Image 1 (spheres, rainbow, N blue to C red):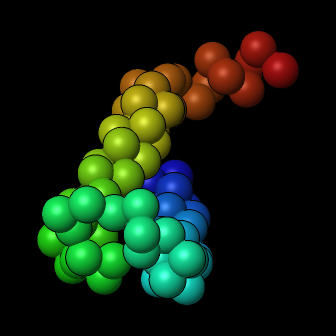
Image 2 (cartoon, rainbow, N blue to C red):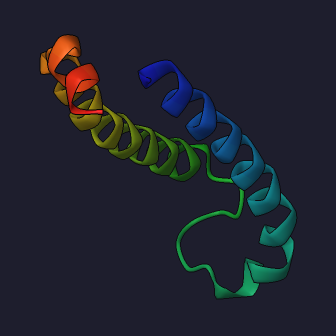
Length: 76
């Protein structure tokens, strides 16, 4: 479950970073104090999004590991 969530997050981050690099040329005039291709900003936001996605995926994964499979199968 975690691997699947991280794979989806990685694909989303790759698409988002590629799109951001293309769009930054149009938004260059709106940025103050940050260069359009600032690696610290891109890295920081990517790390933040990855952390949030990992946290969101950990909750169901932990819940699934604590569930007794026999009780789940009997409930269905």
